[in-house]
Image (tube, rainbow, N blue to C red; front, side, top):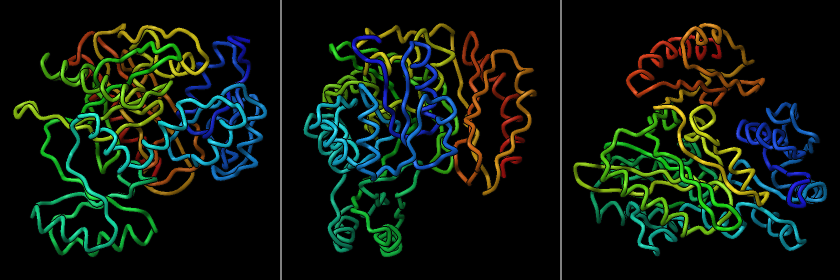
Length: 387
């Protein structure tokens, strides 16, 4: 038992939960996982597994009863259930207060704006007429977004012209979601910053990562980001403002759009959890994001986020078609120096589902890029085999 904590409850049994568990077990904690899927990646390494939906009050209460502290691996958790846990004296990190704002994209952007943090222009949508009014005022392409529940591009519709409005509204409104509009910004790069806050206010901030998306899904992360010192300072300044805005305990990821030529920066999204863009920290940093998250929620001092290598590149393995997961080619990747494979253990593959990732480390980005090119050939063959 450390700081009076023996068991950690984790809501969600996906790969993020699995990677948290690996670090928690190394520190001696026991884990109870709640997830509706018996074959979830976390189940095989959890001390106890609760099969329950993410809307199950009974399941949440059962998890709380077996845990000294509760965390979650994704932000689309029923806040009402978490509030019940807090009212019953259970500690939940990051806090329900911060999660309740962040998980609604409109509230999130409004909270950032109120603190003077730069965000793209946005507005609430009460009906389809609001969308037409917004377009007629700006005459520019924009995003129609679901305020809750979207990830990896799901819940977004890009409106190029007035004729797209009806299609987008019907597509998203058909899912009975509250909507918002957000301006499409001109950016050169998307970067992200992982930061962890401890219970004593201590913060560990990781190096800035540069991200490339394909079909709205993260494909590659490179660290350090190829940005100027001035841009680096501004991005770090904004990320610290975000951490102050959402005064929670645990891991937060801030994604930003950067246009260095114009000197323009916008916060795209904030996630109150360990994040895909921080996977590189497992091999590249003294203490990775998953261990620091566990340290934070259990009241331990945080570890150093400094890189122990010159550079790193993370490459996701994404599913092609629906079917049974089959992996082949990992041995080919391991012929490349500085490579580590992470296979999540998902039995079923669907189009766009994250099935694993590779991390390449080296003395500098040029060396990593050369190694990553060889790994990309393996990943392409692997993704084909997953289809």
